[in-house]
Image 1: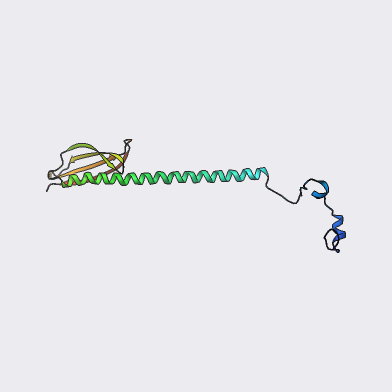
Image 2: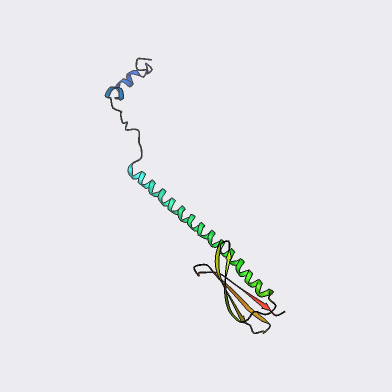
Length: 149
């Protein structure tokens, strides 16, 4: 070992390749063999990440809307089944015509329209229940046939 801390066998070869360092110049030396990312590479990577995040955000929004829609349909199904159960359990056949009511399920108000129509057989009536949300958008439609007891 010599004064530079290099093995003696490599000292002559390394002396010829003497590179300036921070001690001799006072400034850090930028080595050309160390390579980082260029601005273009960073911008391309940032663009790819941004596109992936937008796709993830849209997928999350779609899942949220789907979950809300599923919840609304389930609550509307309860309202519709309640109206059909009323029609089946009534002692008299439902009168031909339309009626409307409001059904509240889990804090949500649904507008329920019931339409009873005559069939070819006078012993049966067709009962249609249309459930709409608070904005009057259709959520669910259910039909059944009610017979005379």
